[in-house]
Image (cartoon, rainbow, N blue to C red):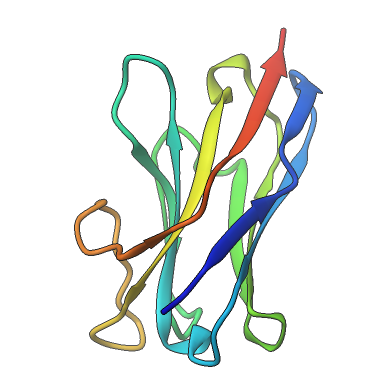
Length: 127
């Protein structure tokens, strides 16, 4: 069982930065692949970024490539999403999610298979 708690959301002006954190409970965090998703009204929960359980592989949605960075610190049971050059279209509720990885370098960019989800944190980018 893994419990996830996101933090770090808030209101920021366009062009600014935020760092989201997702703290996980459980002693096997290092064996979980992690993902960040976001949800906006009228849309499905879409992938933003994902990272393998080894940390060796990452994935980014085209809309955030070059601006967002996903990372993990297994000693702190935490995964991060550094968001730079934020745009109003990045406004959403951001969720972190966890799933078992088949291989150390496997990264997963669909909602399917993610067993554990956090409660979400709101990010609002003003123009």
